[in-house]
Length: 183
Image (cartoon, rainbow, N blue to C red; front, side, top):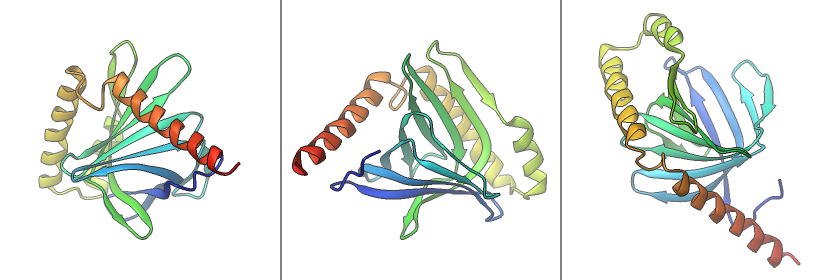
């Protein structure tokens, strides 16, 4: 992917509850920020797992991170449609290293036909004991799992395909502007 000079790059860094590094997405592009939300895009970026293995994302993804919700949403733009992957997580913080959050294991996959699947339930149950999740955290995660599923069922933003496409189009326009300015 060609670098976009007029947009800021930021690493997305996830941790586990005990502070162990979980995963890093290098050089996501920072598109937008408001008081309670940021929008990033990654497009074939390098991802480094906590154990040092790495891979590249296969398709562009518009990513939504929140300060008031305990989840984030990855909207993967594939040839046939948009697929959503939602991580139950702490709200994000941004510092000089990047955008950071704690991953709380539970995830939801949302398919174009509306099928919604909660995954990694076993990992979550294991880590409640293994990583010593306080009861307060499990209550918050369960509450926000319900908020997330309601948002999905109601197709509230960011679970509106047109909304995601608008952000992706905005990104493409910025890339094109940058290419024209370097001619």
